[in-house]
Image (tube, rainbow, N blue to C red):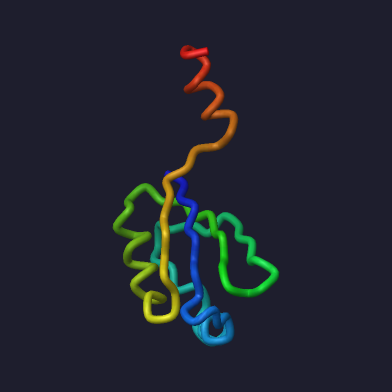
Length: 90
């Protein structure tokens, strides 16, 4: 499964997040794979795609950051997979 993780940095402050990342890394458990990410130009939010088979791994990872970040998680599929899934209804 792929997840779009929307990270809202607490108080709009990216510095503590980047500091922890610099010092400790991503802190992802085995089985959770980072795919890619983008940060808004105001450094208030990050949009990150993660992949895992067990949602509990994602929750475990977010617990390492939830003192600095408010999370929103959306399960996503690729555009080609979405097109294939919706095709019978067209």
